[in-house]
Length: 205
Ligand SMILES: [Zn+2]
Image (cartoon, rainbow, N blue to C red; front, side, top):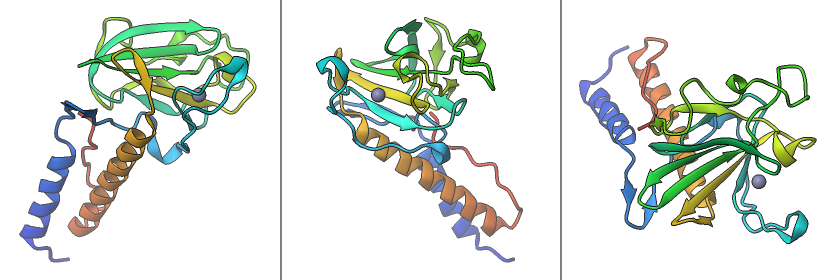
């Protein structure tokens, strides 16, 4: 198959745009989708009623147990701990007043639902308080810990600005769109090159 160098150059340029560092803008933050995107289902449940008069403060990204969870932006891990409601969770400080939370992480040994898994089945190697992470880096795995026990496994994802939760839904939709676009471009490029597989960078940093 003959391909025009210009077409390849355009694809490479587009990949470069997608893979360029995520930056914190004055009025927003560009996120990397925090779950393996082909496994994920989510909808806008911001503000939905929860037990005890609480309102839902994040987005629930439904995915099978042990689906990979990624840092939504670069930053420093500030919490790797557990609470009754959140279960096992991670928090990351991205600077500029932005923080993200990853809740209900996996606490089960494969094949069980006892919630007694060692933490290396919850968070990835090197994820501890004070660790620096990059956008798109593997930080842990989806689970059903905390008050998600007995319901479907999911990542409860929160986005905070200056200490206050804001609706992450539009940021996630945007991130998912970019992840899918990057995938499609990689597939098209692979087809164009007729080499079967092109290892293309996803927009992870
Ligand atoms: Zn939730």
